[in-house]
Image 1 (cartoon, rainbow, N blue to C red):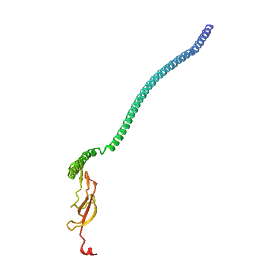
Image 2 (cartoon, one colour):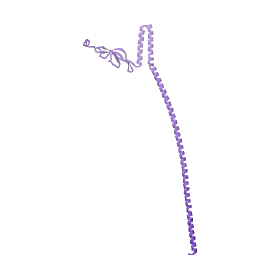
Image 3 (cartoon, rainbow, N blue to C red):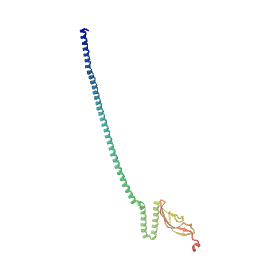
Image 4 (cartoon, helix red, strand yellow):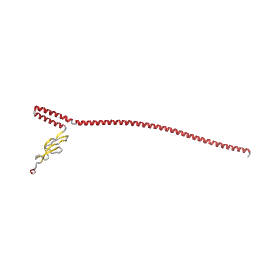
Length: 229
């Protein structure tokens, strides 16, 4: 090979080596660019994530505020309902106390004035007795007898008015639920245990025994043999 050829080869070699150097120099530059792009993307991704976090936090804050507002409204409604129930309770208790007092007062009045009606009915009887005594001074025993008869008849009407009925006794079979036997009388005309004499009248109040009738009842006559014994 000639000298020119060697020079050209040498130059080619230098150009090749320079191109290799250029290639080696350009590789870090490309890697740096890729790295920077990657960093930029990561930064952008981080920024987007931060923004999303802030937005999520803002949304969470808004939700929490709405929840607090709802709870506040529920609490206010519960307090209003509690106050209303308390007012109803106080009113009901006051009504119950008034009812108890009124019932107690009515019960006391009933005990005091339960006999008012019958006593009012007896007042005319007393008036008639007083008039009978006044007439006795002018008419003697006749006026007194008539006054007593009128008074007795008026007493009977008062008893009928209050459903008080005299118990039938004479001629009836002895009834221990209505009659009180005071003794026995031998009688051949009446069957044994028949009421033959009335000692005191008995009365029923609305078909319930008010006072039993005191009576004497019949018994079979003793036989002559039994009499001798």
